[in-house]
Each structure stands twice: as structure tokens, then as C-alpha cells.
Amino acid sequence: MKPPPELVRWLAGPLLKSLARSWRIQLVNEERWRSLYDRREPHVFLLWHEALLPLLWQHRNQGIAMVVSEAREGRYLSSFAASLGYRSIPGSSTRGGTRALLGAVRELQAGRAVAFTPDGPRGPRRQLKPGVIAAAQRGRALVVPLHAEADRQWRLHSWDRFMIPQPRARVWISYGEPFTVLPGDAGFEAGVERAVAELGRLSSQGEWQDAAIAIG
Picture 1 (spheres, one colour):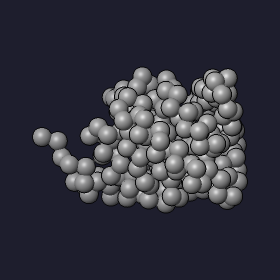
Picture 2 (cartoon, helix red, strand yellow):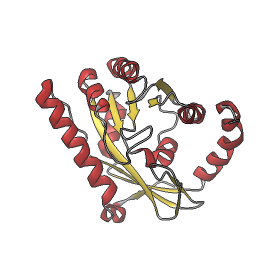
Picture 3 (tube, one colour):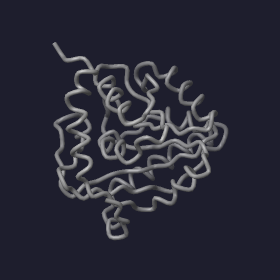
Picture 4 (cartoon, one colour):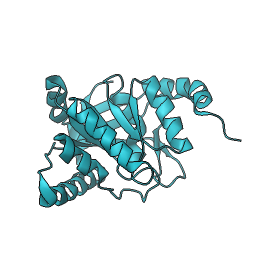
């Protein structure tokens, strides 16, 4: 029998937070997102599932809503994210997707930020499902691609090769150029292409590490 999410959060949450406090985080092009946050403009965070842990830590306590799976693994994630100040929107691209889309659009129309992992909850790894672009289009919100890497990390033997930076690891968080999803089918298709290109660029490059700004 698997443990309930609340027990997992109680046991694993303090360990993960202690680990995260040891990371030496460096930011790349953070001003691309910071201006949106300072103006309280609605926006969508777009990130691969594997990079979720350090990004959850970096953006804690900012009032962000996150789309999470209704499966048990999603409830584990939701419980831990709640301890970092996130609100959950239940659903995914494969289960409860319509409800998740409507919930995300409501958040965006209220002027808030929503985070999506478009290859979750079960992959395939780094293959974008377009629900995030539909939410941004209907919510009239900018899309902010971002990614994280670490110089020393553990990788789980999971579908996404989930990354856990090791103690005292140097973690780079890179922000892509925010973009708008224009109305109509053509705007939607262009948004999907832009999202795939931006995430592909962010998750494959290494040269941006030299320009990183240390914050920890």
C-alpha cells in the first residue's frame, strides 16, 4: 500500500527543503520574467517536467497556480507544492484536461500566473502537449518558457528522468523570451511551434551558464 500524500509531504518535505537551501542558484535573463511579475501581468510558465523541482523552489510563495495530475503521483506533487505556497489546478492533458484548462483560464483572467509541464504527467519526455498554448490564448496571457540544469545532479529512472540537484550543486535557471499566442487557428499553431522551439533551445544550450547571475 502506498502512503498518502500528506504523509509523504510530512516525511520528505523537510528533507527536500533542506536540500534546496544548499543549492547555489544562478539566473539567466531573469529580467524577462521579472518585469511581468512586477507589473502583475498574467503569464504562463512553460517548463519540462524533469526540471520541476528547482523551479518550484525558485518561484515559491509567489501565488502561482500549477496544473497537476489527479493521479497519486500528482497528489504527492500537489501536497509538496502547497507547502511552498502554490495552488493546484487538478487535471492534465490525459485526465481531467478540460477542467484543468478552464481552471487555468480563470486564473489567468484574474491576473495571476499558472505553471504547466506540457510533457506531463507521463510523457513522452520533452514532447509538448498543446493544452498550455490553448490556455494562454484563451486567457490572453504571455508564455514564459524556462528551464533548469545543475552541475551535479541525480536522475530518477522515470519516464522524464526527473532531476534532483545534489547538495551544494550549482543550479542554472534560464528564462526564454516571453511570447503572445495570437487568436485563431493560425495563432494557436504558431504558438505551439514557438513553445517547442523555445523549450528546445533552453534545454539544449550550455553557453548561457557563463552569463548567469548568482543569487545563492
